[in-house]
Image 1 (tube, rainbow, N blue to C red):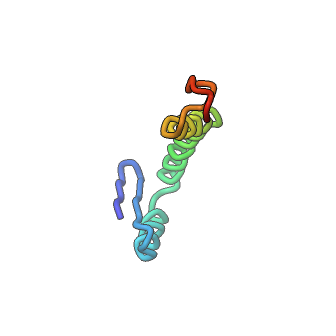
Image 2: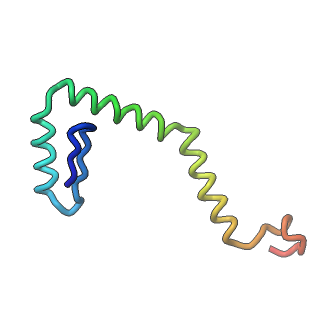
Length: 82
């Protein structure tokens, strides 16, 4: 687990329920102002990173990568074959 009190971030290993419990207890010991600040930063990150436009851009990148690895479509290959 990693805890940064300046930014109020905690990394908890997925396989460690105890680490998660410890992180929750530590979070509960922070002030309301700190929790609100952390929540505000989290919300801003979500709004910035997960907009519909951003997610569509990422899906398009995945599709383009997939097309680049396969055969060219018949219309683009010039051979008339798929």
